[in-house]
Image (cartoon, rainbow, N blue to C red):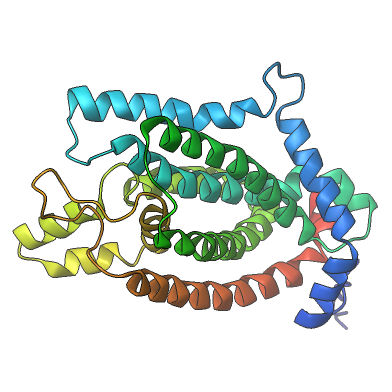
Length: 300
């Protein structure tokens, strides 16, 4: 007579109850803060410049792309430095947050095997550490704006907190999925890195989305631009750019760099993406939760 195997969850209740879980995470907020602080300290341990390295990253991108798109492949985008950094700011938070979240459970295998706590804290702490770096990188953008006399206190700045909230929501939703998969399939972290490399070039960070629209029109294929807009990061980056770079035109004085629409147009698109990201978060959270009780065993 065959005996059915019974799998016992090691540290988690059988079902995810969202309100109860959120309350549990709030009670353990000190653990989250300490882990996020540890993630930030470990990253710059034994470093002479410390957190200043988080500022060096966008500065290096700025110098490289500025040289390339000013002297080698001239870009027609006015105030290209501000345009570039406003998009890089969003992309850097997304890429570092997703990469950190993906590896967060595996990197803390010893902690998972010894301490009982909500496992969601691990990808959340990785995202929190990336948010700290985002703050320092934002200072770089402000410094560039001040140095160039670029105004940034217009009404469009109201889009920034909305775009940031949607970005964090989307990154967490994807990060919960990849972190859970990475425990069993360690190739996940490498696949995420490759995906981010390709994803970057399909996002209007160093080139304006207007170029994709013009190219799709030139080819007589409006579907191309519609497919391009299926990339969630397109709308997030456009939100950051509209909030920080503003409504500017190309040197011809008539063609807008960003989509020629009011703030409500951007806000609605970010709101729709936020709702989709929330639904995705609920799905990936449940998957993460179902697998989290077995993390200790799989990592052992």
